[in-house]
Structure formats: structure tokens, C-alpha cells
Image (cartoon, rainbow, N blue to C red):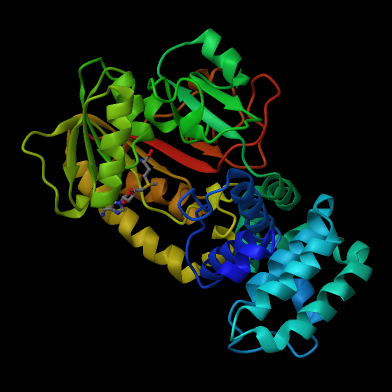
Length: 431
Ligand SMILES: C[S@@+](CC[C@H](N)C(=O)[O-])C[C@H]1O[C@@H](n2cnc3c(N)ncnc32)[C@H](O)[C@@H]1O
């Protein structure tokens, strides 16, 4: 460990390689935090290397096939992760300089017993990438996504959606905040721009969210502009009782409380419920919190409204979670479709006759969205069409059947606009 400290920049690369390696094995990506890399600049750089490698994952895979004549060496520890990070630096972060990529890649693999015999190969591959950089950068956009997703998205959104999604993937997501009230001075201080309703967008920031002005005072919470749409659609009288299923970490719960409803927030994951509790506490909001599997939950008194933010493939969040476009396959999506249907049935049983169900998923897959809405109607639910007026006049996401479909190829209106997460939202009445 003492040796590693002597090489500037090495510790952050080892941390980045470890995190990327976990994601390559199937873990969800979460950025490195202060307890993992203490120095804020190092941490920022490590996270930038990982996200760049993940956003360009499809193209890097293509390059590895081309550059490694004998394929990826088996049982080679951190070799692949270090190689991907270093290629990402050379090809997409030229401002960091090639020298550190080559030097630190060598130092990193030398410290890994399973990979140290591959130091020469690492160097040779990176040098070849340097000379072929221009050609390697020219890969087509559809290779940035798993082929099964390209197929389903082309069918659902048209071939032109794929290059638009690719641009959104590579750009990443800005920070969207939902405001507890209108705070013009705070919006100015944050450098925020108003988007739909009470959402503002912060493009540039030099601090983590919890150090931004207004955070400690509970004046906002983090929520993509698309994720903020569903909870606004109930149109129930203030004081109505609303059940929020799959509530944690609580972005939508907070909106429901802000709208004046009496909220019961339910989630089966106890650690996520604790996050929900602490988020509501910071905001000064109160809800009944229930830790339970929704499939086993029966309320003593039925609700006027149920929000079902169903567990899903989350493919609509690829700007923030670039790994989802490689971690999902048809089998995995089929399993989620089944669970979503059981949850819809349970949600209906928690409603008063005449009560309103909002179903939403942060997925781009029609099987989890449009097809689920069709199935819900077959179960007897009455759809309540949405109108552009409910989106400040923005008509683009309203579907022919009156549901809402957003995707990262759309540009949300507002000062300077920008992309948004993919969401499907449907609203129904229980007969
Ligand atoms: C998309 S996330 C919810 C995001 C949240 N609604 C928000 O706006 O902050 C889905 C949530 O559903 C929860 N969940 C998954 N299956 C569940 C089940 N059977 N019962 C209750 N909660 C469940 C997960 O723990 C997860 O917190």
C-alpha cells in the first residue's frame, strides 16, 4: 500500500479498476464515494474514467476484439478493467494525456498477481490504440447498445432514435432537482434553469449535491425531470389517501406529500426505507412508512390513489446508469413483466372503487410499459387519458392512447431544454 502511494494517480486508478471490474461482472454502477477515494479531485477523476469506459463500453468491446489477437486472456484479474479504463482515457479523454494512461496501466497490472505477466501485452495494445485512435473512434452508434435493445428500440421508436440515444448516452445526465417551493434566489444561486413544473436543471456544479446551497435546509430533492412527471398526475383533492408502492428513496413520495395527500410509502427493502426516512426528515415531510413486500400487503382501509413505481429493467436511465444497456436481456425483462403484473393486481386490490392508479416504469421496453397498460385495461381498469396541459403544454410524450412515453431522444422544453430519462406512465380508474 505504501508503494502505491508513491506513484501519483495510481491509487485512484486501482479504485476505478476495482469498481469497473465489479460492474463488468454484473454489479450496478455506483460512483466511488469519499470513504473509498478521499481526495475530491482524485475521486472525480476516477469516476470520470469509469463512466467514460461504461458509456463507450460497446465500442471498447469492439476495439478489444480487434486489438487482442488472441482474445481476452483468461483468469487475468484486473487486466480487462485496467485496459478498458486506459483505452477510454487515450481515446475519449485526450486532455488527460496518453502518457499517464500507459504508465499507470503498467503500474496497476504489476500490482495484481493475476495480471502482472500481462504488463507487456497491456503496453503493446495501448500503443497500438494510440496509433489507430482516429479509426477506432469511428464505430457506429448502434454498437453502443446490446443488439436485443437496438432491435426493440428500433421497432418502438424508429431507426433515428438509436443515434439520438447514443448521443444522450455519451453526454450523460445533468442534475435535475424538484423544488419544495418556488425559490427564485436559490435557483439563481444554483445556476438552475426551469424545466417542467417545479423541476430545475443544474448543468454545471463544483460540489457534491449534499453541499449545494439549500440542500441541508431541505429545499429540493434530486429527481430527473421525467421521474417527476407521474406523481403530479393524480388530480385528487388535498387530504386524499395515497399509497406509494416501491417508494424508496422517496422522490415521488415527497411530491405526493407536497401535493397535500396523506401518504403511505411502502418498500420491501429496509435499507432503502431508511434512506427514504432520512430524505423525508431533511425535507420536513411526514408519511406512514411501511417496510413490506407489496405482494403481501393488505391495507386495513383502501386508498383513493395508488402510485406503482414498479421495479423494472431501468433501461430509460442509461444516461446515469450506462451499464443497464449491457446488463439486460429478454429473459430478465420477461421476469420483470411477470412481477409487474402481480404488483398491478395487488395495487388494484388496495384501491377504493373509483380510485386512481398511476403505473410507471423507468424502462424503454414496451413490454414493461405500453403492453402492461394494455393488459391492465384487459383486467378491467378504465384508462384516464393524459393531456399536454398536464405537461405544461408539451404534447410530444402523449401517446395516441393517452399515456405518457418519454425517452432520451426527446428534448424537454424549458430554458435551453435537454434530454430526459425514459419513462412510461399510465393512469387508470378502478371501476
Ligand atoms: C424504481 S424504484 C422506486 C423509486 C421511487 N419510487 C422514487 O421515486 O424515489 C423501485 C422500488 O421498488 C421496490 N420494490 C421492488 N419490488 C417490490 C415489492 N415486491 N414490494 C415492495 N417494493 C418493491 C424496490 O426496493 C425499489 O425501491
